Image 1 (cartoon, rainbow, N blue to C red):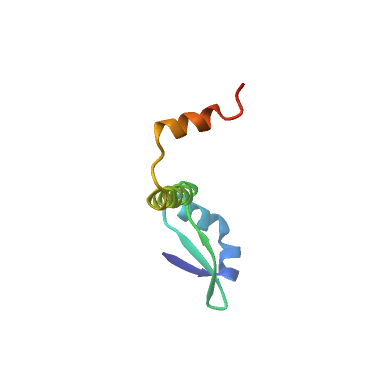
Image 2 (tube, rainbow, N blue to C red):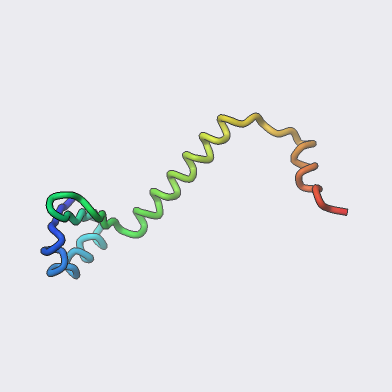
Amino acid sequence: MKQIQSSTAKARFSELLKTVAAGEPVEITLHGQPIVRMVPARTARQEEIKQAIAGIKALRKQTKGATIEEILAWRDEGRK
């Protein structure tokens, strides 16, 4: 991952956008400390999806399975 100081990033912002659009993440630092990580939008969205799926899988491991009767009862709840 490419690192760049915030003052340099300000002067070369359009170049950084092209770098990120090409698929390479860029980290912007302030006084040597990372403050921003720029990643392509698709990459960020894919990470969100992966985290959501992992959360769902973890939740499924913690819960017991539902019976068909329970599922139908939940579906019909509130119907007349």
